[in-house]
Amino acid sequence: MAQLKITQVKSYIGSKQNHRDTLRTLGLKRLGDVVVKEDRPEFRGMVHTVRHLVTVEEVD
Image 1: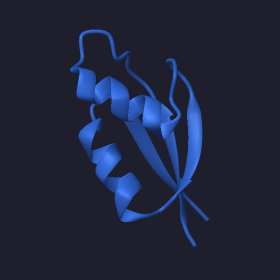
Image 2: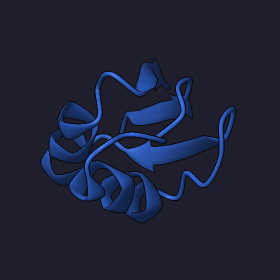
Image 3: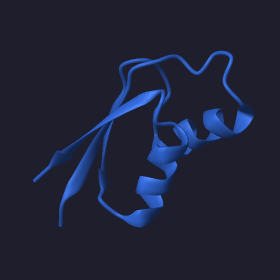
């Protein structure tokens, strides 16, 4: 199954509480953190919510 490499590239300071919670749920705590998650609709939805704070790459 394909995987997503999610990197936090912007700070969450000044963001809505929902966006902060979403980053925490993804496992991102600070600027520059990287997590690898399965490519599932649940994670795609979370990434879509914070798309202005993260970058996403597909990993095989």
